[in-house]
Image 1: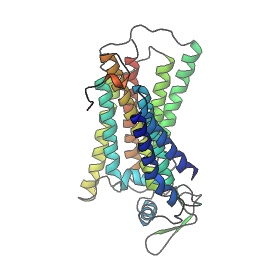
Image 2: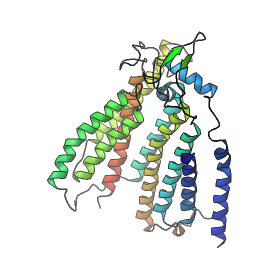
Image 3: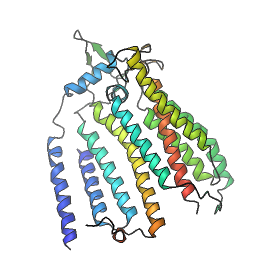
Image 4: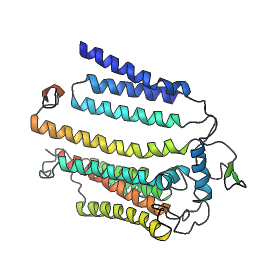
Length: 231
Length: 123
């Protein structure tokens, strides 16, 4: 009984903690000066319409590098906990022909859609993280529709490590070409025309490699869980 | 306002699920609910009255001012909370997968999903 009382007290505490947020909500009618600076900087300095992408890739680029590292660690943990010793042999029931044909028709289209999302991250809502998740959902569709579907682990790990390394190298190019305090500064490539695909420096390149990395890592999580579920 | 209150309610429901349930899978579901609630709260905090998405294309015309800034034709919301939530959603997915694989490993080793059967870390 005392346990439920403690749980109740904890929940009341959380509610009290969040109450100031409710009280302050909707008061602000102007942007915070820092956010104002980010929005105008993304247009004037980086030539980029989507200021969320400007924050993710450039202004808070180190945070994004850290979060990609967290994602990599979580993937490595999943792979470590679910050892790949017992490969699936007994498939209980195969999917129907319609399901398999439909899935193999849709998957390439979904992958192309994911690539579209992460190459247009600087122009429209979207970017590497969302595009990577869409690519991984295509892999999930294939795995769900066809139980005997396998893909190359070598290719998966190769694209994951390559895109991670290229992401860091593209960041270091800023240090080499612009100056010592310009890690992850994308302004070493030409700025291009506003609202065109090849604009805002190296941002589309960096975000594409983030997209490939996220897609490969989530696919590798799906693959680990799939092989675990065989027995 | 509705988004903020919904987010807070989700956090409270998730905390209750994490503290009061015994089944490890339900605890993981509680974690996932807290995650979603926090995303909603962060996005709601960045809201500005009558503002639109922070994407400065033909829908939001702008003109450059003399002091190297820009003046927008309509207000935009804060881009920083959106950027934080964008990465946090993917990280949350991966962390949930990690928790579930811990659960699978625990079930394989000890054959139980009840949190009361794991007393090694109890004080």
